[in-house]
Image 1 (cartoon, one colour):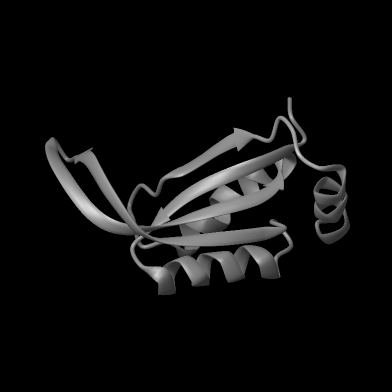
Image 2: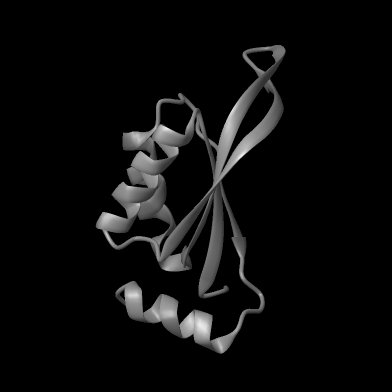
Length: 106
């Protein structure tokens, strides 16, 4: 298992994305979040093809906090089934990983 992960979360708009990021940061569950606007999402929902203009959160944290992040996002998110996908960080600069260790408790 990898110690560090990047989590992708789509949100309805920038305001919702900031609310989610700030809640996760306040609880010290993540080291940082990037908010990318202008994401065109195409997907199946309730048996039909759908689309939406969304915002993407890219969050850096530790694997051991994934379930807590999921719980917090579900509390703050307006979607019935929010996208919360984690990918391992397989390589990164030592300085960056050291910074994550400094800002998130072990």
